[in-house]
Amino acid sequence: MKLLPLSLALFFSLFIFNPAHAHTVAGVELRETVPATAERPELKLNGAALRELYLLIKSYVGALYVEQPSNDAKALLASETHKRMVFHVMMKRVSARRIANALQEAMVLNLNEEEHKALSKDLDKMVSLFEGKMHKGEQAFFDYLPGKGTRITINGEVKGFIAGKDYFNAMLSMWVGENPVGRTFKEEILGSNLSKHKSQLADN
Image (cartoon, rainbow, N blue to C red):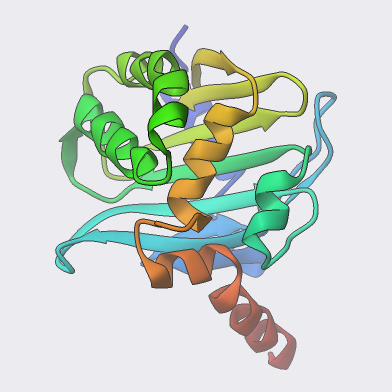
């Protein structure tokens, strides 16, 4: 069931529009914490970065929320804890399927042939969940639930679930793996610009 406009606005307000406790990337304000629920503990912002295409087109702002922030990519991938990857669309209007295909292509760069084969059905399922158009300001969440798998939510609507940890790790490797979408992007997801932001807040 789709959320009503007011409900959708309230949904997004959990992650943006709180300057006193927000980290800003490319004009997008992201909360430094995601409130705890009955399902999981509070998550903290590990880092956030802008993904650009050809150094000209702003594609999305990515943000990683974890239980315990870390600048160690291997530790983040190994930890069996709750995590959330947020994709905040920056393009005015884009095919949702195009976004999914781009994610799939980036994920494959961090998979060997055997891993790619093992995840092929999961990757196809992910692509199938992205339908219609997405617009600037809309969001997709990839929530990892320890011992279970990844829940995919687009604009507040749960679209599907992919079991196991391998799929989420392939997603996260796209940002912090050996072949990330960008070296600076990886550094910022690992908190390089977040530390500077917190220092500035402390000085104010």
